[in-house]
Length: 129
Image (cartoon, rainbow, N blue to C red; front, top):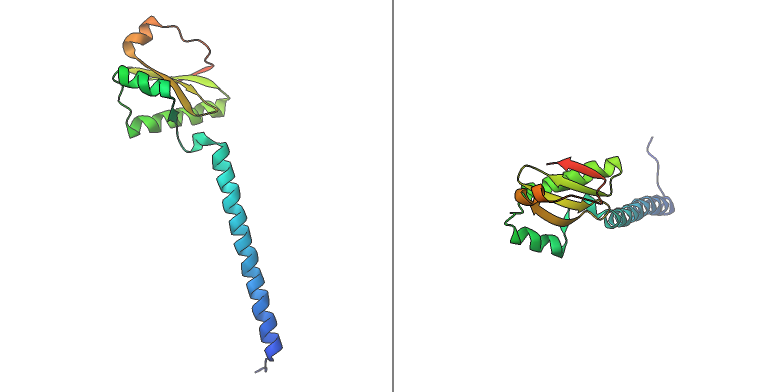
């Protein structure tokens, strides 16, 4: 019932446990690296960015960019991506945004008045906010 464990057996068991934990640690490190690569390749997963042009247009036109709006735009990008769109018009009743979906980048911002006067070209989808 009670076994006597030699020093060598105890050392072997300890080394085996360290190797298993080392393997798990190596897997964890590899997983973190792959996760980092994945998020670098998919910026839209992290959110939407505004181009310099879109920032200046939003400021000129008095469009307030709130965290709620950013969430809506990010959701629009995800939905458009699922449908294979590359350039979309994301709009509500007061404002609209042209967004490049693969780069998750807002290209320009437009107010309601300007929506009436313009024709939107080079888009392959529209999303209502």
